[in-house]
Image: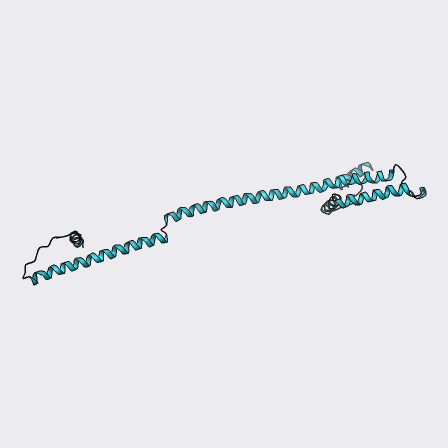
Length: 202
């Protein structure tokens, strides 16, 4: 019989615990503990607790002896307060642990966002620097305007010089016919020398 029972225990899984404990939702219990911790950390809780203890003392001190449920030394009140303190401490610690977990997650998220923002800022700074360098090598609108204006002035001056040169040449051709083939030698000025050079180049 002992061997059969041993074989059954080897072939079939057995419960690790003979008693099944009730299951609960840790998240719901944590929210409940945080609610209790928040309520115990308020001024209303201290005022209400002081009122209850004062009424307790007054009733068990001033009431008739037959109606006093917790006479002097207030043993039952001491037990109630000890029980409250023994449950309040772990509930407050549980609420603090949950808050610390949330703070750690929020800190990690903030660190991740700060890292991503820093990377984006560095990327934008590099792009702006590259654009500045590229814009330094590109002709701007004002530069093009000044260059075109300068070229237009040079073209106007060249046209005026060409017209003066053509007028002078026409005058030279007309003078020998009017004077009988003998032209007068006139001194040449700087404008004539410039026009002569331009005519040679043309």
